Length: 217
Image (cartoon, rainbow, N blue to C red; front, side, top):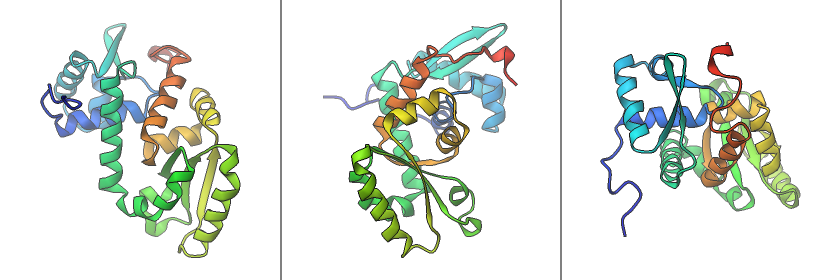
């Protein structure tokens, strides 16, 4: 039985970066020009990538005026699995320390995202920002674990606690704290559940959020 992507060539680095950008910043609409500026690449190169990813079924394109804007095609299991792999690789590469530090907590959680000043510059950070998604029945256990951990860590954990429904609601709003955690943070656990939450939030407006890009700042 073939594995995900076994029938297609491996994704290049910039292709992976495009997919992660469009997933993690899902509430914004990107065209080839804005992708090129965000990822510091040529517009021609960005256009070639988004067209290729659309052809592979990983992206959906929609035309507004003369520009085509793109979203991750979360309707397709292939795209969802690819994003899951990319999120895992990103956290292993950039947040391996924190994967190890918080792994004891994973069984109690649905999703955990490391974000904030710890991601930008740990040495200058005052605390460790974590977006935690869990059922209400786990609250006491998680609170006790954080209290215990804060006695050991050099910098205290600052949790943003959410139920799965809270997360979907805040992604729909959109809530700036939750959006920034997704946009700039590293997902340590719960990749599949996070992708499902983003998909549900996205579907509130269809694959392309409103208002249309021309009316955005």
